[in-house]
Length: 322
Picture 1 (spheres, rainbow, N blue to C red):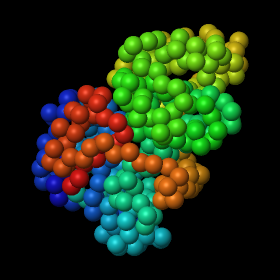
Picture 2: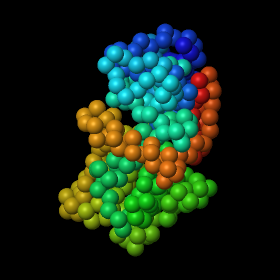
Picture 3: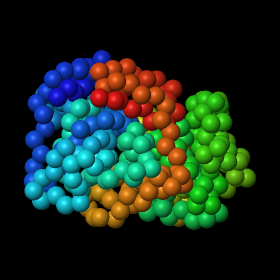
Picture 4: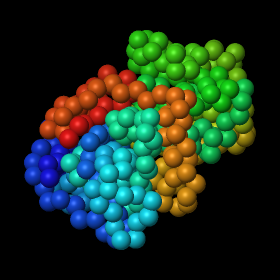
């Protein structure tokens, strides 16, 4: 099969398009012909500074396509099913074998490309807001990086739950495009300090829930913007810098909470998260939630796709098409 691979971590130019051995599914696996790859933020971070499990390495968390083969212990899937898959790596390829526990059938009303974008972004957003953020109707949410995949999902889910939704982005144009999705107030973080802006918008109160995919100095600000009894959920390091020392001195006197979140741990610790993602796919099918795809690239142009994501121009998901 063809795949986008690399031997050493680095910039987008480390990616090569070449032939690699086909994956061999085990008894509990599903083999999928990949038709759409949603490039996740973690994919670009792993390519930049992650571990190389094998050489050549095929990066990538999430991909959708058609089932070719199922293992002897697999039930619920059969060849010809359209599915979306999640795994630790291996998405940037023409074929993918993953455990059946990390596979979801795509509803008939959802395109394969849209289905490829749902589990990680919408599952992460849903859990950050409700399972870990305990968001309630009437509360205020601040979504960092509102134009990202998780950001766009979180804005829609929070608005639907009756929250007041604030979000940050680097361009006013992006903030305007977020308004039809449920954004109440946008903050251009390049033009103004988002902590001060959010305090001003909320009459000094702050945000009840913050979803932070950026990390670094942004995470420090996310804690400072919390309201009394506010909850901040840290879900990534899209800003490419990690916080060496985090000031949490205000958390205890203000009864605030900082949680870390990783969808993969939830998926493989219980069936709850798997059922949640199945629900989200069906809500997309019913038109209750919207997937936003910015651009598509051929799999052979994976370096260009990664570079585009890292330019911070994208609004929504960027896909690779094998």
